Length: 314
Image 1 (cartoon, rainbow, N blue to C red):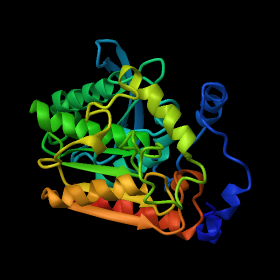
Image 2 (cartoon, rainbow, N blue to C red):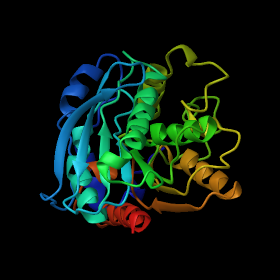
Image 3 (tube, helix red, strand yellow):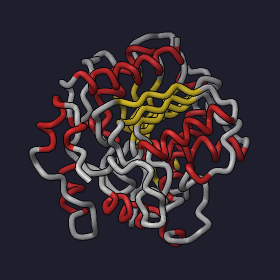
């Protein structure tokens, strides 16, 4: 398989340096380098950021970053869950975007520093995300937001956590979500396995490979790894029904390893009566919006996402 001829020419410079596989040997250095990753967004210095600590999923101390718009009248709340394949990255990666979205939409953004695998496998990270959403609901009045306008955003593994959170919220009935925004979400542990019928042969060659995917799912699933029965909250692509989920945005690159699982997820959302907005970006591989802010396809994908979030809070 060679998909390089399908890559958007503006994205080709990103492939000049090889992307290392994620495994037990490379993870420590990758964590160091990825900790410096920052997603670019228009400047929004008026929005303020506060570091706070709340009670996490198992009662432990959980760090969040709270972004407050300068507007005195606020709209709702957006829980942001960072990517990093369940095993790396920090909420600071979305600092500029969180400030921008808070200022543009008037919402309060909460970015959660959830526990990472393999040190803390499922359900630790998801439990932290649920705890952050519960805190937003409890503190809605003090934050000046409507408890009925809470949404979640996640990219890559953060998108998988966001989708798992939406399923958990639906099934528990304790909290509510009014929308979910998923950017190339990591939804199904079966993707890329030898037993899987390879219906998308021109995916997963660049940036995010089948080998990296297998390692990170193993790390995240812990005791559930390689089992036939995997909780749907860990791997939302396994859910039998998506009925009852909130309106959903899904964006993914055409060469992303996750394109098949994301397309199937969007189709199933539509089949189950969930309002769904789907974008597939030609010539784009996994993480293309994180690595580049100049290509037309990257800029378009950001506009699509930010405009969708702005429409929700309008």
